[in-house]
Image (tube, rainbow, N blue to C red; front, top):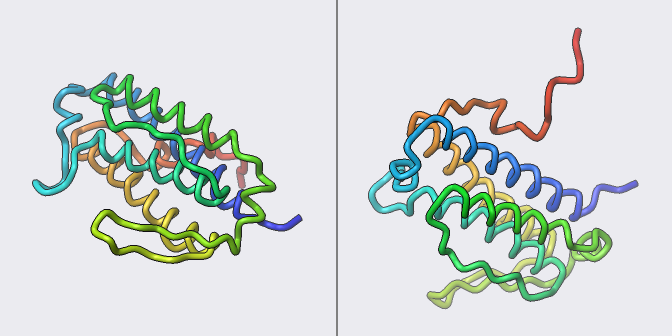
Length: 171
């Protein structure tokens, strides 16, 4: 059995999005939601909700582009942890809806990524996933983690890798 673009995308997106949802539960139990929602690492960056929205957008847009379909629209209107958790759950359901065979067959699919300023990139499916989508996804996942951690939420590496569960090997 070969390792496919589906294997390198959907399960990774799903695991991290579920981890991010659990971070919000921990944050809600420990800190002021209002303060955390305004958190940012620098004055010119977007606040915490945007990091969750961008991670969601990257996952859903990646899957749609690899499949050659229009991505599900999710306006960036979330203003509470509950709304962010709902968005993450909807994104997971959307990612899970893709046929693994269609994504696996998209390695050479041409993908044109265009930015509002008129610039962009032309990729193959493989190059898009590995060179843009995954790095961009983890940029926003890690930034969300860092904002929560800097805001005093007791997150650690086991939370970041929560999807692995408890260690399954002992010496």
